Length: 339
Image (cartoon, rainbow, N blue to C red; front, top):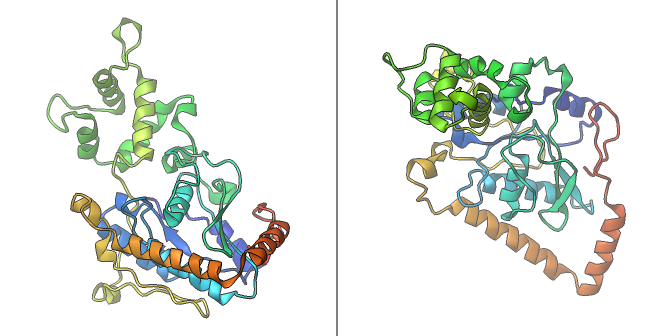
């Protein structure tokens, strides 16, 4: 919903300067929370810089799973001389990093929650025999210039830990349309019975939810916390508008992918299918997910058949000894070639 606000530009610059041999790919998650045209436009903007994959993390109706698995398999073939390849999933808190990993491996291996800070340690997850995914805590860069309100709206800060959550409700009202707020809480959006300011809105929400103090006074703090939770979890629709198309781009609606990786071809995605499972009541068959799972199983089966049991045990012992430590600090030159 906030592509420019959750983009880790400092990490991009750090990789380009200190580890130019590493591949960096954009994965735009939670595309199901914005209109299709917004997702397409942002994919087109990011694809001008580096390869970009649109993604919707889901165990049953995922989007982009096949494209991402195909890309990772190509990385494995491109670096066959390496015993293992570690793929780090990095980004802001609460953007769905653990959910992306769970979607790729088709099981709940990483603990997920709709709140920031759920992932507290580095964790290695096996995708293929020689490809590991690294789930890591969210990255928040101090030099991003975010205000306290920006951090709250991005989901970096937990709403229940705010001392005065009601102070951030005006910022929420500025980015969420009035009709969406009224629909979420069952309130009139116009007329004499609607709210005139944020204080009245919180009073109406607290009474509607039964959040009252002694004497029947509405609890504004509780109502504000609930509203911030709904905002962070996507129940209050909002998005950052993409840049306007230039005149020479308006006639060409196709998204051109900037594939700047030698030996790797990015699978084309049909962005017209974004959100189809939601528009049709989730009646799609999930062909892309089944195809990705089949390919992943075939890859693992091929690896298992290539060696006998004794060689497997020796390789596993060697991998456990040579496995790189899951420690990466932004700004320090401690990047391993295998990561």
